[in-house]
Structure formats: structure tokens, C-alpha cells
Image 1 (tube, rainbow, N blue to C red):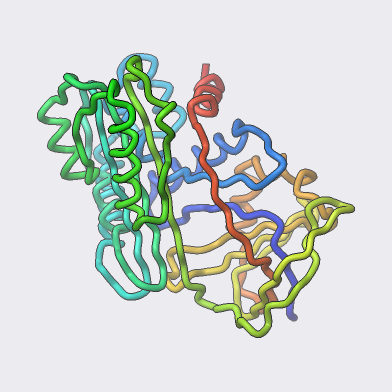
Image 2 (image 1 turned 135 degrees about the vertical axis):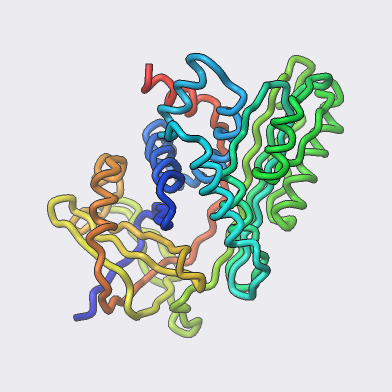
Amino acid sequence: MIKYITLFSTVLLITAEFSSIPESINELAFQLQHVLPETNGNTLFSPLSAHIALILCHQGSSGMTRKILEDVLLLPSDLLEIAAEYKDILGRFNDNQDDVSLSIANGIYLKMHYNLNAEYKDILERFNDNQDDVSLSIANGIYLKMHYNLKSQFEEVAREYFKANIENVDFTKSSLITKQINDWVSTRTKQKIQDIIQESSLTEDTRVVLVNAVYFKGSWAHPFKMHETRKDKFYISDSETVDCQMMQTSGDFYYSESPLLDMKILKMPYVDKDISFVIVLPIMAKSLKKIETKLTAKKNLMTLVKDMNSENVEVHLPRFKLETNIDLRQPLQDVKNMFQ
């Protein structure tokens, strides 16, 4: 039986075979989804990028701050386990293959004392792939005031395991440092992300700047046929539609639905089958707002993912472009408050 599904909302889930890191990243994603500012448009953020930066911050923290980060990130007591997992995940995508490319860069500019462990190295090396059909480039930077020194142990681990670019910056030269940060991010994301920060963001009182940038381009395992793309209606509320270019494809996809949650869910794989695009569709409602509270309940979405079975599905997906720049300072503060 062919099922019909049209995109309403997408959620990125990491479901790799690694135990600690995917759970930790997904947990952060759901927490941020709860506290991100509401908008009338689309919301796009990278929990992987934020997670890498927060793991690095965790290593330089102590006391209550460290405990809060451990709670937020669901870190195991054995942080060597985390480091080992990230080393494997990132290393896997560092093979310069033809079908997948993922570049992740970490820039650390800081004063804190760190005791980094090894798991992230594997993840970073696994994702830094530079392939043709799937491209994911991530830049993470922590920029800190001049004359702050790293402990040699942390610097060694940060460079070796987290692929970190480490230096100090002079925030009094705001124009120069703005260009430095933007040029670094642009280079690490293949010139796809530029001007990630504005000069007005930096002052002589700035101590730390945390930057995350992600660029992703993928080739579908089941490509859409150009000649089948046609103008159609896309619902943005129960009563409001917009015209869009609707792409179409069909094939065997992992699919499940829950009348109780009023959701259908579909997983569309890219050429690298470890990377997938997860689509959520209301069954009865035509407005995403009616199912948003159910989406933010992690167990609901993860249950649907777990219950997926391979079925023949006809997919209608609007052609779209998303670009956003999110200041995570307040959302991360709100996440922290959830644990106080």
C-alpha cells in the first residue's frame, strides 16, 4: 500500500550506534526546542554544534556549573567514554569518500583550565569526510580575551581529540577580530556561512565569544525527479496555504504513524545511510502548533522512530531554503534553570 506524506516539520535525530553521545545530543536538542524563542517563521539550529562547544566548556568548569552541564548534557561519569565515542564518530567521516562530506572545526579561545578526554575525536574525524554527494561542514569557536593561558594538558587534548584551533584574541580590535572569526567560519564551512557575527557584538569588555556554524548539503538515496516538481499548496495553518514548488519521489522508506499523537513520521536517507532526514506530519491537523507540545516530548518522537517499518511511500516535499542565526545565550540560560 502506498502512503502519502507531505512535509510540515522536520526534526534531526542522531541514531548512530554509539551509546552516550547520540543520547546526549538528542537530549540537548529537545531541551533547546523547549526554550528557543517563538517565531512566526521556521526554526533551525544544530544541537551537534552546540553540544561540541558545551562539552569543551564543561571541561573548563567546576562546582555547580560543571554539575549543571553534566545534568543538561546527560554526561556519563566516565568522560573517557565520551571522548572515545566522539573520536570514533568524527573519524568515520574523515575518509574523503565520494558520497559524504562532513567538516567540523572547533576553535577555542579561552582562559579556563580543562581536563579534556577522548570521545569527541572519533566523532570529529568520522564526520570530516569531504565527499561529493553529502556535505556537512561545522565550525565551533570559543574566543577568549588576550593573555589568558591554557594548561598544556588541555591544549594537547583539545588539539588532538577535538581538532581545536586554539589562540587568544584582542577584543579591543573589534573590527579585526570580527573579520578573523567570520573568515575562519567561512573557510571551515567552504565559504557557505559568512558574517556569522557583527562587529557590534564585540566590545572591550568581551571575555568569551562562542560561535557555532553548520552547513549541510546532501544527496538523497531516493532522488527527487526534476520533471515531477510542480506548483502545489502548502499548509502553514489550518486555514492558510502558500504556493510552493512541490518535489515528489517514491520508494521504500522507514515510516510509522500514531493516531493518538496525531503524527506520521518518515525517515528519508541520504546517500550515506547513517545520515537521514526525519519528517513529521500531523495526521488530522493542518497546523504544526497543534502537535508542537507532543513533538517536544522526547519519548513521543523516539517511540515513533523506534516503531518505524520499511514501507512503500509517496513523498511530496516542498522545495525550501532555511537560514538562521540564533543567539543561544538566553536559551542556554533557560536550559540551565530547568535543572536548578
